[in-house]
Length: 300
Image 1 (tube, rainbow, N blue to C red):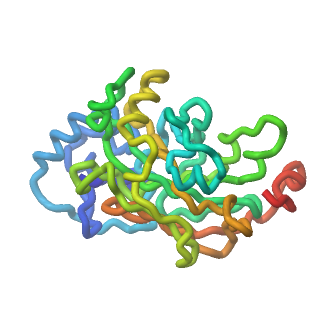
Image 2 (tube, rainbow, N blue to C red):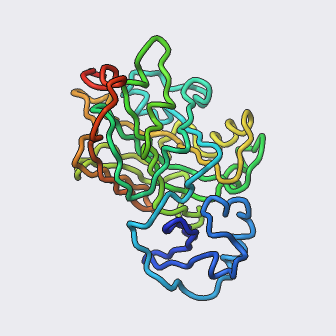
Image 3 (tube, rainbow, N blue to C red):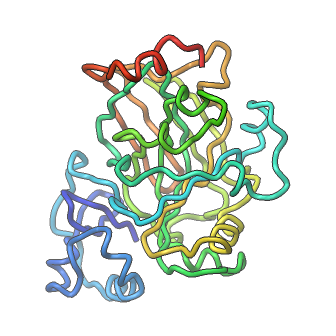
């Protein structure tokens, strides 16, 4: 099953992009609000399994929003691919880096799969990621049961302004990764029965056709199941929460010379069996003078 946010309405879509408006097709049994569908996730699955008939309208890609537009919690994991750890000259951790390289991306940074993203500086980097959305919440979820708590899969971009992440004696991650539009998600929420092996998916991204990242999720140091188990051991997971599971090698900050995103270009990101994001990049019309010294003119 593929669930999309079409102009703010929950919509089931098929491989040809033909949609079914869930609220209308269910005679109001389910709300049109894409985020609220997770509160009745099991009931939605049962209803969708009994749905009789094909979609009745062609989905306009320009109307696609993030499938999870307002999650209560957004978790993200750093250094979860060995090649990225090597590229960054960091020894891979022997336990998930939830405490040392765990961060959050704030909800206001979420945008849709085809949204235009404004670059607030000349040090914006991209990080393609497999993102999972939680369907059934819980605490202390066993690794062996973790996939049963996943509603589905999305592509995510963890866009980052590098300078605020690294400036000062106490670097932080979350703010520099949470500018407006810095968390494109989509194009739809894809349930795991739609992919051959959810633990082994191809992913990558390119800037105007130049490949920047390419890997498979089997190369994660810690898989989805272990991440869910480790996070839920500390923080209860809630229906509709999302987890950015990490990015592979190829990020611009680790290249020589450094390679950052540029205005008037297009960033495409994909996960095999899930789909593609296509985000046009534009320059900010002005930049606050308070941030100019920190964001522009740095080699970071």
